[in-house]
Image 1 (cartoon, helix red, strand yellow):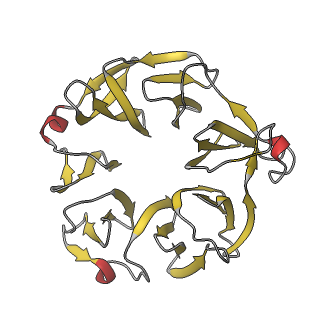
Image 2 (cartoon, rainbow, N blue to C red):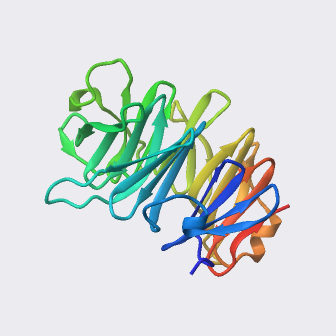
Length: 277
């Protein structure tokens, strides 16, 4: 069912729209649509996440393989371990390294050699074995989001395989769920507050539940749930105030969003994708 879109990616002037099983691409030059194998030369059809950096697109499949498209070439790497099936949550790219957040730990993949280099399982002072749900590379640091909080490793400062080089970031009474960068700085957020990199509160709400925050240029887009109405909406943070975008009032659900060439595209269930312009 390609009416239910989980996440979006923009690559080679095409907007890729991924459903639970299958996907399609919308060519933004001529508005043509291609589905599944005619859209991209993939091996799999069910994907859990994607990441793009420059001329490289990486897709993570439900069966534990990653498919890499770069400069006209394609590579496939199986991240499953003997006796263990991997579940890939998200990915991030730093230089020529891919970091894969999974139920089997954080996996370091070389995009030059197309091989798995290292796997990180233990983080923090207590040598905790944690599951990273997301990873970010900001300010020469590798951050991971876990159920137990945020941990980070500073590149060049020791061996990331050694749990002692991972430091924890925590804020009392808040469970941090994400990070976003803006103007050479970065911010942490929980489900009701945003904090500066110095952990000072810059925004808080009691009426909404923050789900995801993305930045494009100087725009800070916030996907959130309006608690009283039990409805998903998109807004923008302006001068530390959350302003709802009018069009989101009409959308039945919101799973993902992306800004492409000044236009905001939204994905959800039943309506597939929506262009806000």
